Image 1 (cartoon, rainbow over the protein chains, first blue to last red):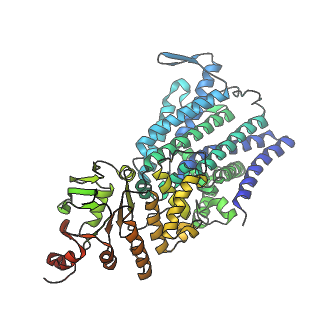
Image 2 (cartoon, rainbow over the protein chains, first blue to last red):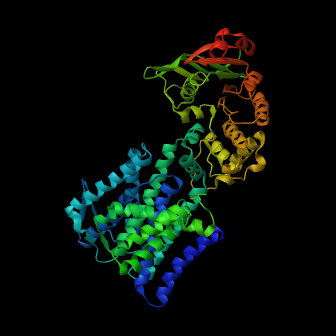
Length: 327
Length: 249
């Protein structure tokens, strides 16, 4: 079987290769697809910290994806309409600068994850899933009813936000930016997984009682993991909104939370590149099968079923010859 | 008399009408092994849970090193010096043997909030972990996945994790459970030497081990301590024979 390191490298090279090939043959739409895959992968890498290492099946990660999206949408909206954003006594102008938008997206998502985590991590199993789902729905319906920012119709942003030194409207440059952030998130995941924190968190998933008897708090470990996880998914949300130049309540939808879980399971739970290969496959299916039938999710379901029944380690597990998840 | 390390004072816990722990006062002194025995359903597990912090008593106190830890959770008690082993091995099966003891080491150092450095590359933590593995005879297996260990090796690893904590008192819940005669004898020899390092409150069904190791024995029946004494005293006690050794008085 193929060593995991090689599989990982091939997946990343494949994603970058597709974008470069599309540049060479001048099909910008393919670059956009690759960008979409990179952004979904980034969101799922974030979720994989909570789900893969921490064992937290969050059905509410769309909250962070959506918050990232609306952070971008709101800031860019005020910038493009030359209006100010009034936050009580504070009045700020909007922004079209990606680094600033990312910062706001990450901070907002981290704060939301802290609050949601504090409340939901007191439960586990199916209750945790339900509470995170409930939070997701709260944000979803709040966004629908928030008329200032488009309500159900969402917000259109006419020009993609800027990044110093780059022309973000050029598809390949925007792809490069997203791809670089994905690589950075993967580095964070890999380091964190091998670090003392990852060791303790991974043990807290398997044997919380043991973690407590060595003097550590599983709850705190999981809370910190949830916050880091939410922050990364929030960053992905900001990029996703910028890719589409549009943000709407669907970014908060529970279907999106579910899709993030599904693509991790398909790729390989708790594996570094699981979310990336899962996201690539997801975007491919969505594009190819979606062109043939509106019911392409059926085929996604068939693949998911096959993975769950016969290859618990996901695609990465299959390629590396490791049967189960995590190990 | 030597220093009092761990003590319960009039501990009581009921589940509905059932008094699982009924006014239990036992203690553990430096340098001793205090065995806790009793038939199934006597309330040993409930008592252990109250001492380790998993369960709050209805009444009474738990003292560790002269400190009232009754209101503390499991993690705080562990940091205060209580090293616990489980009846059913609670190990991270997916992880390597070394990673399991490293968890203990990083708990002992109280430094899990490191996100960037490799856990296995921390020389200090690694040394602490490897020392514990060497002491129980698992050093050569440190790279193995824990799931690949035999039952006996898992019992050893269970003890090794507690060792990494350098606790002031050990609380061991049936460490011999499921061990064969050979393994049981080896572990008995190891625990015999361990009492000098930190006293052991030992819950055990293996009577050979209990009689070989215990400085004192307390007998629990229906939630109450019905006798405490030396091995000879307990062997001679009529109430114990009736309640536990199954003989008609």
